[in-house]
Image (tube, helix red, strand yellow):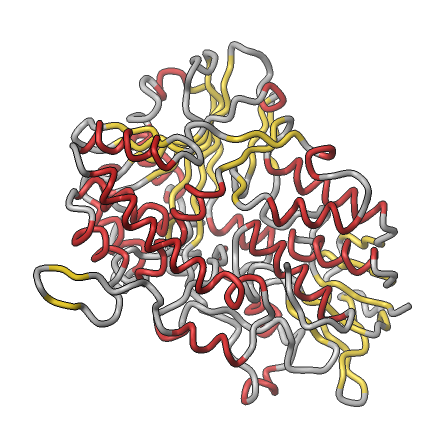
Length: 505
């Protein structure tokens, strides 16, 4: 029985810990904060509850597999998992609105034809079919297997070439170009690009392979955990870890990965305590681990950089509203910017300038139908989010900046929630500076999922670290950010430690 030290208690760490403990390993998790879940947190006040991280779940099969492999109770026996239908509602500056049904290709075609005109749905469907081809080519090497040298070939964008105007285009365009050339309507193009923007990608530079993001959502569905939101999923995974005898030490910051005879031999904590281990799983933000010299930069000649230092973060406004949630309200509404270019320029730089106006912001409005998150039926919790520059690129702690920007987000969100400001009881803004403080992520950046293309710039660090016995999991390692990806990384690392080839299948 090996002793395993896990740094961090995010979802990738929990997934790895549960699997390792089920395999007979003695697992101890060290977390600098006082709770588990990483970015999958909860904010509560006056009977209102809000997810502070993702509000919806994609690819629930990843967590179904985790629960099947680690105990008797299934995922559905542990949490109430429900489909969000419609999957999303989209509101545009010209007054157009369209609701996209969950996991219904024909329903999506009908909805887009009705909103954008005949033929719009079929054009969208053709792009999704090419997104499916990307999925089929990249699913195993990009998501399910450990990162290896062969994965570098995924630096070439697998999005199929398309014949247009008699010219055979060699190589794939950006996602924005796909929208402009193949969808034929700026609103449909904005809809396509919004999927990438939600993950922190600039649709103007994201590879066409990013079409896999809306494809996955449309094909496998969008899910919600009723009875507490996505934080309830983190609670269930944590409870599964406890059932498998995983030991947790909260308020225990790791300051060094110990090394002996050329391999990881344990960790040292901020109070000087040393914990010996046969293997170390680092599931904390990799850039922070290196910058704080938990893992020495000595190995950089043989190991790639931990990842970009200025990936975007998220700005969130939690709103307590008087008045109940109207019947038939969509769980998620995306309000598209009237002038998207200034907002994208500000978010992705290089010259940021002043805060953009409300009309330049694309915002996501979450309105869950969940009695566990409201004090009574006469009130409603609403969350508004937007992708924004990280702390440091913008000083979110400067006087008035967070309040000013929160006001702009709320103004934009009123297109989804008429009379929003008149119903407001209170609001709480959360910035990338808050994310940095709570999770240790440099700048409060939110890790993006891996994508093929872009000459490999969007791939993540390998799960196998630069020192023998050191492994990397979580959103900052392969296969990147997002709840399903974190779960996959935990499965890959657990399999590698157990002597397997490393795979989440």
